[in-house]
Image (cartoon, rainbow, N blue to C red):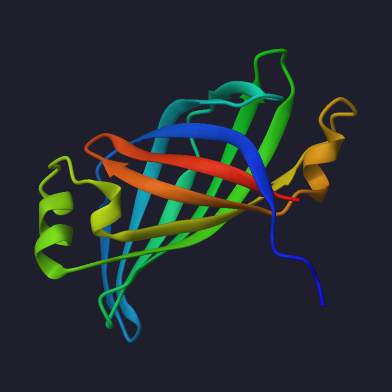
Length: 153
């Protein structure tokens, strides 16, 4: 029998975003795109900035779940670039999601917000991150999400 999952803190990332551009309804739900303006990340082995220009291709599914599809570039404090992608889900009680939609501060324990990031870099120094499976727990704030990301060991 495999042992239980273990993890360690990889980094905490704060992403600043523009307001969404609404694309409209599809058979699967409402589509919108959110542009990344920047941000920061920091952990015990890696830290730096989120580069401007990434985005989130969001599907507001017909079942009320928000499905995320994010692509962005990280730049470490020593100049290395890491491509980060993640898929995720956010959902919760209607009144909680309405408060988030108005930009109110909502305790993350009141809703479900999880992501599964993957990384890609040509950097020899940070090549180890190419083999990491990670999960993150999100906190949606008025100017963008904050995730505490853990590496699954």
